[in-house]
Length: 385
Image (tube, rainbow, N blue to C red):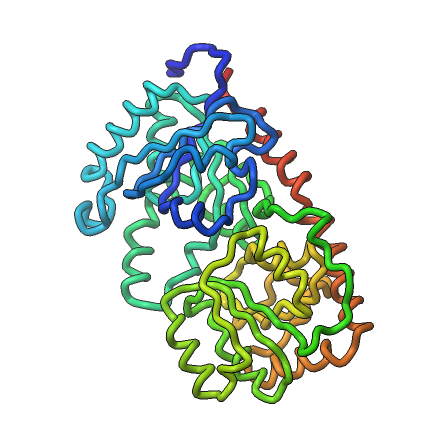
């Protein structure tokens, strides 16, 4: 039964499973990120992990709304014996009481794990609808190790509950639609991640730098390993910027030394987003690697800027989001990347054509204003009065 009173103050509760202080420090948040379309007066972020956040520095992420940050850490996988509902009961009850006092009009939750399960329980008890955004195909992604497979086994039940009971699912790339549908979603929207690219970031020339500048922007994890790109530039005159950090960072530095290209390669762990967009548009090629099913924020930004983009073929089957000729696809080998890079560096005409195709595709699919409009429409259609 819905307990909520009609109020003039419109509140959104956002449930997150990750620390936001690092994202804030890196300058990766677009303005108004948590309040697209300025639908709400207050944004309340509930972290289910421990984090120390300067609330004042988060205000720009709420648009016109005041942003509040709360934390109610969830029990660990070990402590809850694989997130068994009866061992989550106390944590769920605490979160429900917090939500009852807050009286939000809508909930947005950013994954289908225990956070999605929590949103489902809040809806069951308090009648508050929730929008679930999915950022991976978690029945197929990150299953390469025994521990990852064990985690998947334990959280499957929670995924089905949170997806099936959601009022709307936002899939941030196309393959997620299949995952959401198979797990019980009925109201699915394909809406890519919003980014903070404006017309001032658009690439203005396709003349090559001297030497040519190549850039990769990714988390440095096994599924996004740019090792073959490092090896591909051995015989190419260029500057190569690798932006990002992760568990294979030192491994990549070793590959650069072993390949003899350490003087060509610059490793940059973090760049504020505004500076990164400028850096991206100043480069000649965006070259990436991903064995997952998604499309990264940097690919969306690069396309909107008009970058010529090179990406590997998926190891299983083509990724729908990369079809249509707006990305130069190559084999995930040093030779495959070298051929693709050389083909573009040797022809300004090819670079212009590919950059224009990427930008056209981006304006049709990644336009920030259109994305904001679509999300805000979903919010308005579901939020309580």
